[in-house]
Structures are given as structure tokens and as C-alpha cells.
Image (cartoon, rainbow, N blue to C red; front, side, top):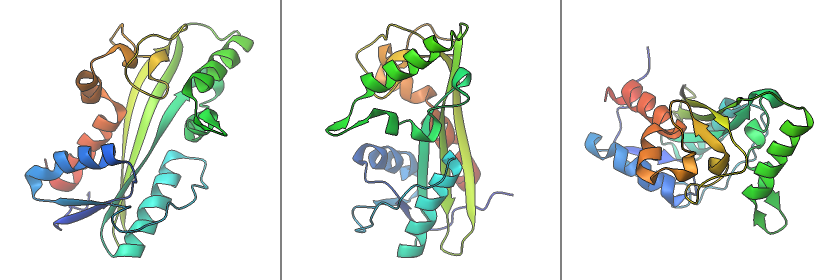
Length: 204
């Protein structure tokens, strides 16, 4: 049985304004005020796990312990079947350079590794988002949203971010980067995880 959320304040353990706005909007109907990690002067803990759920747990529990508020965090990325699930939790790391993140470099690396393996088409992959809601007493609930699809090359589309230009979700013929942002947001891995979270903890 999923533990229901009974309070009126939820800490979202992120420094990302877009994620905060999205969560505030989603939880507005339930009378919940969303506060962010920056507002509470929380540092970003080191993510030392090799799974999405492990890293999301680190962030959620650290925030709940530090503030005494229930805390929600997420960890997300792309898993490519022919690369044994890589980049997975290292999705953003593949894009790191000395001057910020370069996702074209990350996508090129993924493509080159698939080519080196002569991986058969369709080159299946999944976008995954794992949400963890942790309470100060140590209890947590986990929700995972997954969007299956396949990879294309050359990349297509100007919208989206990260690996969106090479990912075509199952049942569509456009990449995430070719889709209208609102259409993508409706079917994204984060949307699916949030839907499970709202259903589980708010009965929404």
C-alpha cells in the first residue's frame, strides 16, 4: 500500500527552475506548496550509486533529513539496449566538457559505439525517470516512468534537449526534438513517473 502524502508543503530536491514550476503546477489542485532545494540552501549531494533509484534516493533522503519536510527527487536518463543499458546513470556525464555540457558530443559517442558494435536496427532504447518521495522518518516510495523507442541517425529536430534529437518514441515517427514541447511533455518519461506519483500519493 503506497503511503499517502498528507502535508501541505513538499520539498522538490532540485535546483532546476523548470522542474520546480512543472511540479508546482501539477500539485496545485491538491493544495500543496512546492519549495525548491535552492530556497532551502541545500547543497547537491554526490550521486554515488549506479542505478537511477539509488541516486534519486540519495537526493530525496538527504533533503528530507536536512529540512524535516517530505522530499521528492528524480534521476533520469537514457538506456540503450545494444550498449547494455549505457549511458544510463551517466547520461549527463557523457555530455560533460570543461565548458558545460555538449549533448551533440554525447549523441555522437552513442552513435559511434553502436556503429562499432554493428548493432542491428531498430536500435532500441528507453528514456527512464525514477521519482523517490522520502519522508523524514526514513520511509520512501518509488515511481518509475519509462518511454520505449529507438534511435535514429542523423539526428533530427531543433526542440527538446539532451538526447531528444536521436530518440523516436514507440508509436511515433518524429523524434522528441521534432515534437511540440507540450505534446512531448504529455508522453515523456517524467510525465509517466509523475502520473504514478500523483495517483499513488494523492489519489489523483
